Amino acid sequence: MSAKPCSKAIVPLDLSGPKGKIVEASLMLFAASGYHAVSVRDIAREVGIKDASIYSHFSSKDEILETIIERFRAAFLANNPDVSMFDYVFSKVTPRGFLEKGFDLFKQRMDDLPTAWTYLVLMREKFDDGRAADAWNEHRVRVVRYVTDAFSAMIRLGLIPARDPESLARLYEYPILLLVEDYVKCRCRGEDGAEYETAIRAHVDFFADLATK
Image (cartoon, rainbow, N blue to C red; front, side):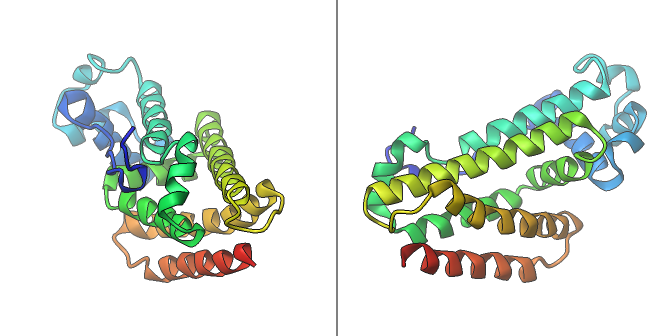
């Protein structure tokens, strides 16, 4: 843990080495065509290796997806200050600054295309694959719980009026989660996501005003 968690650097997904190249190629193909439409042969062709070489690193396409999901879970934990550090965090930033920083960190993660592809794959496959659905729902619950803990700390420190922190977290996060889906789609397609970024920042600003009254 960094001594200054608010300035903690983004840790990208580790895609170095032969195994990482397979994961990266798989992410790109899954994001473009969908998990079920992509074969091991497609992945091998994209990497530039023989089909059999895939099985030197992964037992199946399913294991590749499971690896993607595990990296997705780890990325959230790696890129946010631990809840035990909230007293320190809120000695350095205002509630508004904390919320703004949260989106800034997310936007920075989206600058790493494999991370953006991961979001798109899980958002798409959550309707057809139980593992993706579980991972996405787990992520949503984790985000709301994390923000609930943040609002609890803000209330305890007298930074915002006392309200139910979980209700605040849901009111704050659910609109953002919907906007994030559209923002991620634009990012993965190379399109301008400024419309959604503006909407998210407007929501952050609106909620910061609302929460402090």
